[in-house]
Amino acid sequence: MGVMEELKGKGKQVVADVTDNESLKAEGEAQRSKGAEERQETEARAKAQAHEKKADVHEEKQQAAEA
Image (cartoon, rainbow, N blue to C red; front, side, top):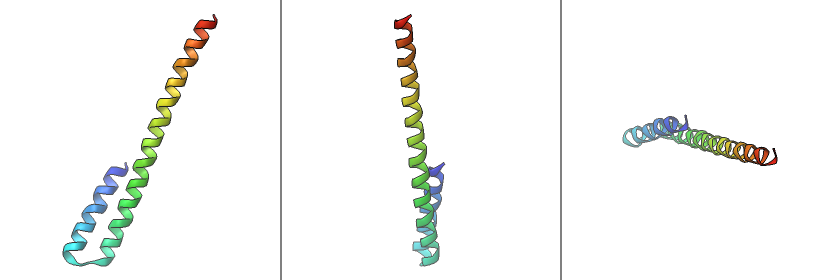
């Protein structure tokens, strides 16, 4: 899940800020970006599945009305 990656990345950024570690800060930023992309993909997939189910319901109603 993307949320966990985002949280881990944020944690790395916080530690990097405290320790003034630019390498760790860059790693944290990259991890947060990756997590955000994964989260958006998961949300888009869930939305698409919901639309498919809604379309299936309409299809079933249409077939019942034609019978």
